[in-house]
Length: 123
Image (cartoon, rainbow, N blue to C red; front, top):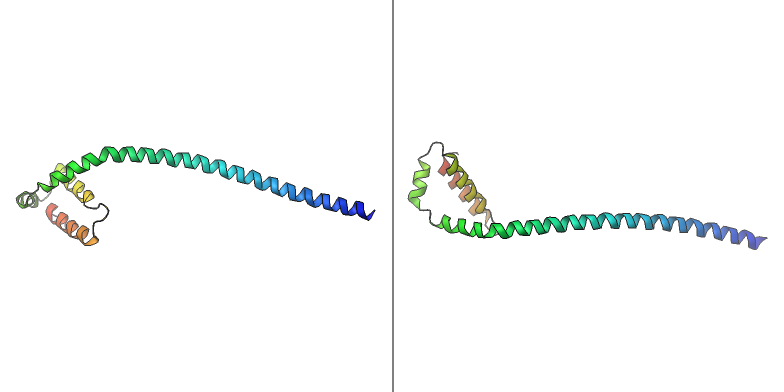
């Protein structure tokens, strides 16, 4: 009788552990499925971003070359505007964005920001 009671007790413990293990297995499977979906979403976004970057790089290079052609007298003309025309403001905004590329020192950004503000007449 004692052996039957021990066997029954052991069987109940095994059943409880098995139930917990199966529950955890289901949780892991669910989390794995969610992670797979998330990985696919990230991979799609990454591919899209890489394609956008590939398209933007030549345009950025061309814009940087054009920026090198701007001379002091050009900026003097821009400084004369009390309110710059929308296209001039848009171009200056684009230059500002280009100047914030990685590797640019914060001091350079601040100096350019001050120059930009002075160029469009805002302080």
